Length: 451
Image (cartoon, helix red, strand yellow):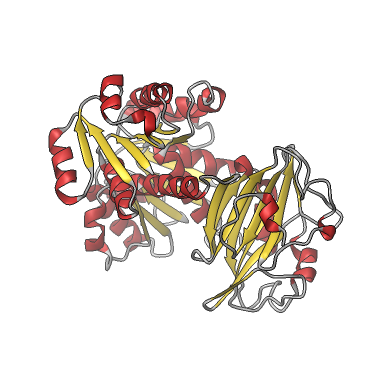
């Protein structure tokens, strides 16, 4: 694909390097000559010096024939404006990085007017990932479908699990609420199980579940949050988003930050969190605020040095706590691999991976009818989401009457926001969203699921 990236900061550079390895045609636009030279010296990438929000520069980059433009400059407004100009100039799809919480909240209302394909908020993505780690530490992965209504969740079947030794058909008595097992990984093999398939200890299973029912289901399997209190060192945007999610989950949140104005902002928007104005590097303050007794500590300060030192201290005084460290410079992260740190993360890296996943789905869906694709079981299977826009061979017919291919199953149907766990008597109708899980390649339409 022909792709333009506006902005050569860490996110833009990371995306450009990844895309370059996959043989896409990449053009990077930026006003920073040195950043462009550094990129072109190490990568086979075309660079253009200039303002990517201007039509003349975009025209120089052949925007009218491009498949995708990604705007990842440091300024939200510039990213949105760039995407609007590029879309008007003929680019097929656009992605903008938008970090301001107010903009993120309003984007669903104006996304179509802005002609925006995807908006990325690195801090929000990080917060969602961190929330999952804290709420469900034993969940291997969790991905959303159907505009956030459906989760695709992967877990390991432990020795005492209620699922161990059960046939898939019998597991519905345990999972309930429309939850549907899609794949089972056993050793190096991946299976699309039928009702007679027996789940064993050590298997990794992936299943679809309504987002609202996921927590209840995981709790029934003994996969519950063991973390009831969290200390956030730093009041960054990631801290704000994370605190919102944790408070909603019933977890106590305490935030320490040395910016008085920021503390006031957080206290006005996070009613149930305890906001403390002070130095998060002050050991006496940390001890007085109970760092020794909290269940998890997350360092979200301005520098890697502060985060690393604070994390090491936190692990020393509270070895049982989950300690998560934000690292901005990925190049130095390998230096600290042998330190007693639980988890390190980088918002820009997470944003880059999310964009790459979208691009891979977009690339695979060219000349296809599916809207999104997620690779599961280490790429051995895919989950494809189709939007049914017109009648076809699969619509209006009970699923039991369809001659569906092997190594494929219809995992979920959503109709007007309601999830249907497919049974033989159900049918696919116009307007539905259908999730198909398969090991087969080359599916481009729902009709392709038939023999």
